[in-house]
Length: 240
Image (cartoon, rainbow, N blue to C red; front, side, top):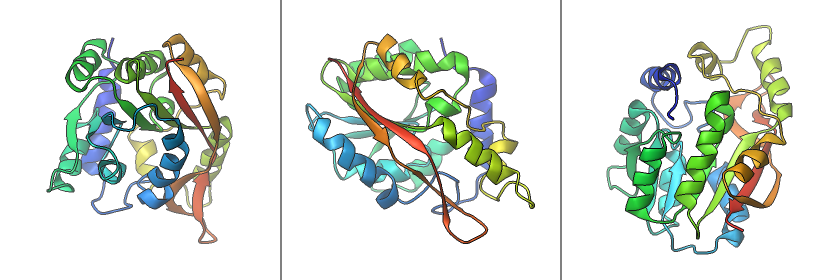
């Protein structure tokens, strides 16, 4: 099983058209407000910090480069070749490795695991942006990469985020500049029930070791000038 061609093409189109520069994409907040906060929650639960880390859905690699300074080997994986071209271009020193991966493709994920072995996984906002029929396959892919020794850290928008984003899009001026292209390319965040993510992980053979809530910081600002944050849930999962 792999993701639909429509979904793949939507991401390629989005990254081809996205403006260059830090923070130009809605979710491309600086690591101090994203991966750094997540790592403080993730690190205490790592069974082996020396394992490689796979940044699944790495996009243009902003968080990947931050993580590459904190793990011995970091692989940024993404469905979009256009996103990976940006990630490599922003990382001339090669602090991380980058490769195209359809995480719903069992054979591709098994090949990655065969290469890197058990790994820790960082995934921010991938399940809720994927199509419903692909979500279990994505969770299965995470379990394959994690193997027996790795741990996964997932951040996903909560149910309350859907209302927040709809309200933002329905403002007098229409969707703000950084949300509009997400909607235009047909990759608007889907609504995943709060209880669904632990269920996907359980079916994949993983146990949720701990979880919590944390606002997901964006690069967009509201009419009052404050940075837009949307409700999110985070999970640490691994083999029991």
